[in-house]
Image 1 (cartoon, rainbow, N blue to C red):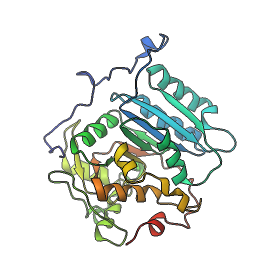
Image 2: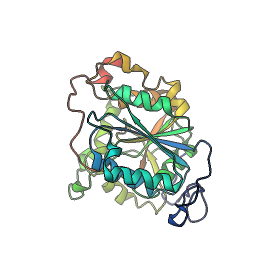
Image 3: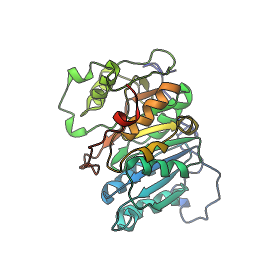
Image 4: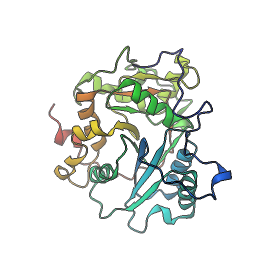
Length: 305
């Protein structure tokens, strides 16, 4: 069930929001105590964008709770991003905080679906956050996402990315499909030809920021709303994603494709339900896309209308 506008939430941890295991600067030089599997593993598919990835990791380093680890799968042929000083520094910060970081230089490139399948195969946590390598998360966002997914009991909750260069660009027509979940999040079957797929316009520009301003949700609170799909920052119940096949369908796609994340989300939504969270603290860095060949749309190949 989504929180009402008067509700607030507190992520796992103590009254200050600090989760056990997140070590402050005064502890960084102390030996690390081995920890068990974290509640969340953040899965980052990466190609190029070394500076952007450093910003993404900096956003993760500012998160308080829940316990999480990071797995980066980099496919930059000339060398992985963590060989660059800014990215390497943020990896070290996360590790000093007590956040396990796994680095994989995963080649050859076989497309984004295979890259996501590879990452999912490495994960062991009950929750997995697929996070693109050009997104900054507002402090507290991971805790809000986790608490919302736990409370809703659905297959995924996504924090749609916003381009803050568009804050002065108000688009009322694109915001029309916005609809809060009133009660439990329920499964929905959506395909590209359905009217509900038109909800994708909610995530253009800075539409969610404008909608959030109207809703006046108290600090720390959230509401869940109906989506077609969410790009860039999606927290899944890992078992629900696996039960729907994960990204194993990569073998049925050419390497040059787009929309693999849409396929996975539509499958999970149909069986377990899915939602977007507002306000969204996911900021798109507005870097050029690295998926330049979109000649194959995965939904058109893999899903029946």
